Structures are given as structure tokens and as C-alpha cells.
Amino acid sequence: MAKKKKSIELSDKKITFNILKVSYKVIRYYPSSLELDVMVYEDDVNLGMQKIAFAHIPKEIKKIIKPN
Image 1 (cartoon, rainbow, N blue to C red):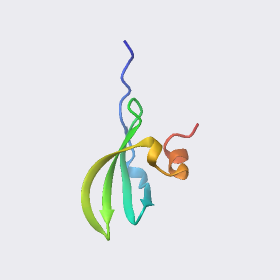
Image 2 (cartoon, rainbow, N blue to C red; image 1 turned 90 degrees about the vertical axis):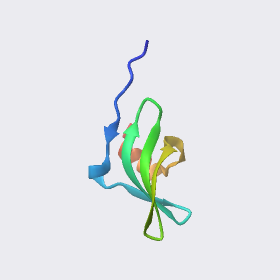
Image 3 (cartoon, one colour; image 1 turned 180 degrees about the vertical axis):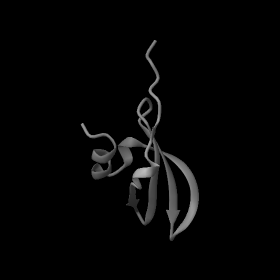
Image 4 (cartoon, helix red, strand yellow; image 1 turned 60 degrees about the vertical axis):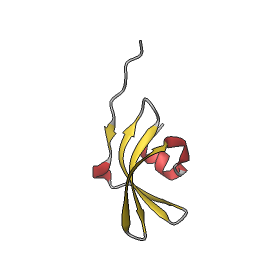
């Protein structure tokens, strides 16, 4: 059975990106499922936490999170 990788805490790096007028702040990265926990902001209003697929984030952010 494969070993489950732990999550990587990224909140201290203050990584943010925008997609269609919505701002996202990266909290945590899960390498085993290739997902991110992000805080969602629209017009500076916090809409809560959400999971987003690693494939759906901008290429510049992918290089910061997983530099390969």
C-alpha cells in the first residue's frame, strides 16, 4: 500500500492569485490528491475556505508551490 503524503503548510508564504475577479490565498497543499486549501475573497469580502485542484491554478503559482 502506498504511503500517504502529509499536507504542506503554505500560509506563511502569503501566496495569492486571481481568477475572474476572485482572489485566492493559498493555505495548504495536499501532494497525494493534488489539491489546495484556499481562502476565497471577492471584493475584499471573505467567502470562506475551499478546495481547488492543482491543475486549475495559474502556471506561475504552480512553480512556486511545486518547483520541479
